[in-house]
Image 1 (tube, rainbow, N blue to C red):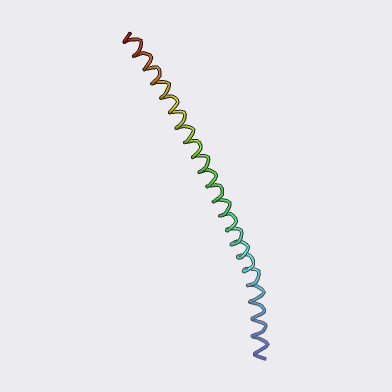
Image 2: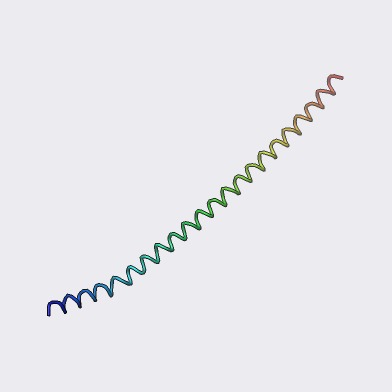
Length: 80
């Protein structure tokens, strides 16, 4: 008789526990997938920022070259 009561209690606990565990496992897997997506997004943003910085450096170099070439032509005109 006691074994039947323990068996019924165990069944009751398991019937409530299994859906909760299933839900937690699903959430954990979903969380891992979201973290992977977040990591990929951060890597893409870093690549875009690195590209933008590289373009900005090249643009600034081009501007400096234009300024210096203008300065050298001015100095040539004044020395003549």
